[in-house]
Structures are given as structure tokens and as C-alpha cells.
Image (tube, rainbow, N blue to C red; front, side, top):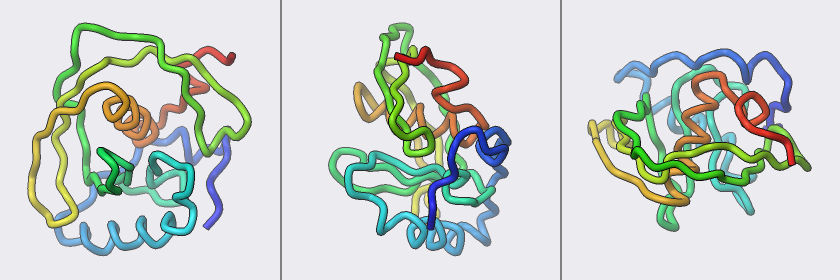
Length: 145
């Protein structure tokens, strides 16, 4: 599966929630569309691979995890300037303001509701992917460097 490239309108539309009934099917679809593209990647949002559902997969603490219907519940007061790249915007880097810690509510691959905290690089990856699901790219919010 090819990565959707910026400024394709699929990247600017917010994704739709995944129903509990469809969660397994949608997760499998995302995994199949991204499994051969993971080398050197940190994460994939559904809209980056032509899907419309609110789901992403990311390399968190050294393991690929699936996050269904993620919502950032809280953010640290402290922020920093993160230099980021994106598979949908190849060859470019942007400086983006990110929170150094977040709390995320989501459904895991087993259908369990979860609330977990993430810090530093893992928090940045999740914020980047959640932005994608909200129809926002680093080109929209960051400064090209």
C-alpha cells in the first residue's frame, strides 16, 4: 500500500470513530497495509494508508501497538520544540511544539478500554499520529526547517 502524500485531502479530513463491532477488522486492515513499510517508521495513521477510521499503529517502547479511537485526555503544561518528519511529506522536516507528557484514552487491539500515560519521544509519536487522525499534519502546525 502506498503512503498518501501531502497535500492530499484524505490527510485533511478528520477520521471517524471505529465501532466496537468493526474494531478487529479495521485493526487487521491497518496492520496489513503497514506491515511491509515499518522499517525506519515510528507510526502510521489510518488516513496515511487510505483508510478513514480513527486508528493508528505506532512503535511505542520498542513494540508496535494499535490505538483505536484515541483521544488525548490530558497534556503536560510543559512543551518543547520537536523536529519531526513524516512519511506523507517525504524529505522535509518541521519544528512542531509538543507536550512532553500526555495521557491517552483509547481501545487496544484486544478491545479493552485503556488510559495510559506517555512521555518524551513516545508522547511525540502519539501526538503526531493523533494529529493525523484529526486532519492535521506537521506542515499545517509546524515550521519548515
